[in-house]
Structures are given as C-alpha cells and as structure tokens.
Image (cartoon, rainbow, N blue to C red):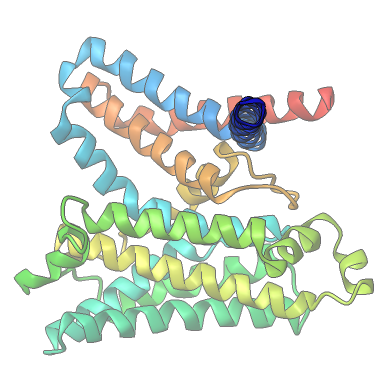
Length: 349
C-alpha cells in the first residue's frame, strides 16, 4: 500500500514537472516569436510607415472617387506598377553601391523596340524577349565596364548610354511604334503561373524577396552595402569591388529590359519613347523607399513600395480629375518629404 502511494506521488510529481516544462517551452516559443516580430518591425520601420502612407493616400482618394478601393482599380494599379517595381529593384542595387544609372529608361525603350522588331520579323515572343533581355545585359555590361575598368564617373557613363540608347530606339524603327499582334504574348504579364495570382504580381514578389534576402543573408549582399559605405575600406578588406560593381550594373540593365517585356505584354505596343520617364521614377522609388543616393543604405522592400506609391499617386490624380501635369509636382513633394524624414531620422540617431 505504501509502495502504491509512493508510486502515485512520483507519477504526480513527474506529471507536474512535465506540465511545467511544457508551459516553459510554450512561453519560450512565444517570447522568441515576439522577439522576432520586434526585430522585423525595427528593421523595416520606414517600410511599414511607407505602406501605411500608401493606404492613407488610397483612403483619401476614395473620398473623391469610391472606385479607388475597388478590386478592379487595385488590380490596375498593381499591373501598372509592376514594370516600375522591377526596374527600381535593379536601380536600387546600383544606388546602394553609391552609383547611379541614368540609362535604365533608354534601356527600357531600346530593349522593347528590339523585341518588337524581332516579333514583327516572325520570332516567337519568348525568343524575342530573350533578345530584348540580351540588349539590357549588354547595356549594363557597358556601363559596368566603363565605370570599373576606366574609372569613369557613373553619372557621366550612364548619361552617355542614356543618350545613345534613346537615340538608337528611334533609329532602328525611324521613330515608328510597333504593334505586337501575338495574342499569347499577354500571358507573360496577365497569365497565371500560380492559380489566382497574376504573373505581374508573382514576378514582383519573386524579385523583391530574392533581392532582399540576397542583400540581408548572403555575403555578396553585405559586400554591396560595404562598397557603398566605404569603397576604399572594402578594397583593403579584399572585397572584389570592381566585379560587384560590374554585376550590379548588369543586373540593373537586365531588370530594366525585363520590365520593358512586362510592359510590352501589357500594352501590346512598342514605342521609342516608352521609357522616357521611367528612369526618374525608378530613382524616385528608391529614394522614397529609404535608399540614400550617397550609398550604403536601402532595401528591396522599400524600393518596391516606393514604386507602388508613385503609381498610386498617378492613379489618384487621374481618379480625382486633377490635371495630369500635376503628377510630377506631387511626386516631387513626396520625394522631398521622404528625404526630410530620412534626414531627421539620421540626426536623431
């Protein structure tokens, strides 16, 4: 009898200890989860503020035009923003390394015209897109080689390729637009590789997540930040500065060309002036998203949200009925506010 009572007491003790252990594990997991969310919130504080600002802008616009929050309008905004998001991701990498790429707009136009010519000559749209992407890679490689091998200033180099690319976009077609008649080409932008999710959203998500993880988790991403923060110190540490710079310009050219392919798929028409305003908008998206033109800072999430903000502003101006000529002024004001907020944050830090 005594032995039975002792055994029961032991079982109760073991059961109580197991319950205590389980409770402690549960508390530990909750604490870890809360800590992870706090770290994410701290790391992406400016991006979260920008996302809230986008929602506020949409809310304000909805007072004048209730259709602003309709599914159809939101889908249109997302589809219109996709090319700018893709381009901004490439420009961001260059800006983080304390460079600048003024040629992405003309690369957008030139690659689109070349792809349009290929399709009008009978090439399938996948083959034509590959040719267009090759143009983007070539322009990016020229930029990177002139910057790294000859030591020319990025502003001067990309200003030259901007002018040459814009000129060639007119030369190869005598300034005429090209209608793209292949109905299946629309699938590149408006198709659904994943049911229920448009390709234009999928490509933006893949690009943003891939670049963000690469910058934050990979050694090469840390090198990109290091080069932008201090080029000379990076060389002394053995970081392959020239190869990294060349790489980011090539990626910027590639993404500018890919954004052109997405746009062509959406509008089914190639024009020599299609990228005229894209360069300024892409740089503005990066700045609005928290990147510094002095290099060393910036995130893919911020650049993507900055591109969305610009598109939302353009859409809001159209819905309210304000003269479209005011779009640039409103965007400039948003950039000014973003820069001032970044400046104040650095002063407080």
